[in-house]
Length: 554
Ligand code: SPV
Ligand code: MG
Image (cartoon, rainbow, N blue to C red; front, side, top):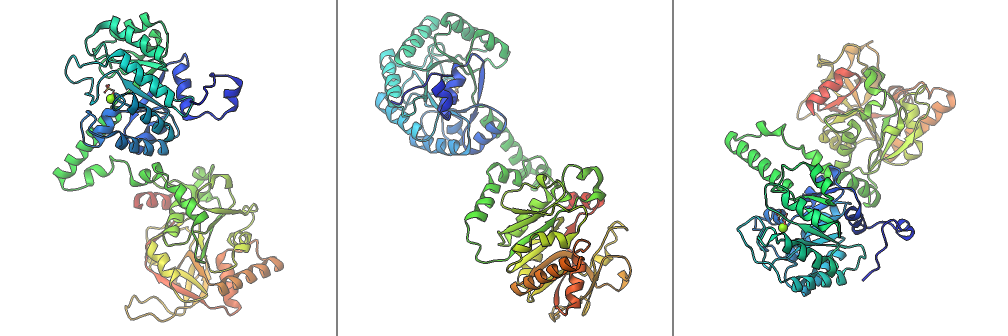
């Protein structure tokens, strides 16, 4: 058995504290602590998210979640498997309800060894017989022989590979109707056998038995309680009685049952999702809970990119028209239904197979902290424009790439169409944008004129070339559409853009240039910029009006 370091000792402080060590500290601390029931990885995460310091892996709840009775119908290895998911999903200690230990001392030995291997912080075993029955069912359940149960405790303590692993002995004498004296006799025997704490269980509606036990017990070992039946008792009563830990034993499982019943009934009766959609957790929150962002970051790190285009997102500007909304963060980080706009954009790009994403930051750059992206900074964002931001990512213009404004969102098929379009430089133009009466009148638009207008004909797949691009209202009536801020470059296209940026830097025009200026220069040099016409299915955010429509639409 590994050695146990005394709480607060110098050695203990220099060691990283294991989950078992943290459970031990909770049990031994003078303050009352609380652990909350969970029955799988997801509920474990929710318990941790709520701020609890520990998890009660309830036998009743895990059984119920598996659709079986709390009578050891789930085998101990099935429980172990669930516990492994819970331990992997959380960082707080788990005290597992080990029922009776699944047999005699020998089963307890194996159980404790396996729990330690799986990173479980402690086990609670109750002085009953295998197969167990839930304490709240029936009367006068038979109790284990004290000596035999002490053997289970000793065997468990001798088998722990983590010196801090906690074994809590659960005394069922009060529940079984054997009285206080027997409860105290058993608790003392279990303490002497090596139990780290005793759980005194009661099914009375008041806490009299608990306070009576605590008074007579006198703090000989930490006391754990489960106030399921005496739930009206004020928590201060437990503090005053010197209880060490409260287990809220089954309330997540019961809450899940109520919520699932409600939702199932509502959907069944209305034959629709309308009534429930706003009431239940959005799918994206489930993705967040299960750590999807971490996977995106890992994919960026470990998955071969296959030489696919790199994405460069220009997100340096503040979005001053959004006023106080962009005081603390740039507009690309504005919340759109619980998720920053930029994160939605990155996800669309990732979904199209582009994993190498570089964001050019500027205003409030520290606010741009997303998993799965790289960043470069345009620290002169205040006096420069889009071309200078792109020049900050010049080193990354070394092969096929996608350039996007950081404040736009588009449907994935727009990007997929662009990625498969021919041409060294291809820009996306919305042919219908001019007819969009919902936009604010002073909103800046990158107008374009092309070699021919959009026709919408199925047979029309002739090449379209960009002839002019400008962003004032002059000539808006002659425009064939609006540049949406999305461009794809081949390796040769990237070389052309790089050379143009270098030339602009040399002749002093870079700082004041936006992307239309850069494209105009390229056109002037004879470069062919292809156009991919689309009709809608994208959005940009320039002002509060755009943001409101975006929040309504997404
Ligand atoms: C459990 O949560 O499974 C327990 C606590 O053992 S109780 O149901 O209150 O007995
Ligand atoms: Mg139980």
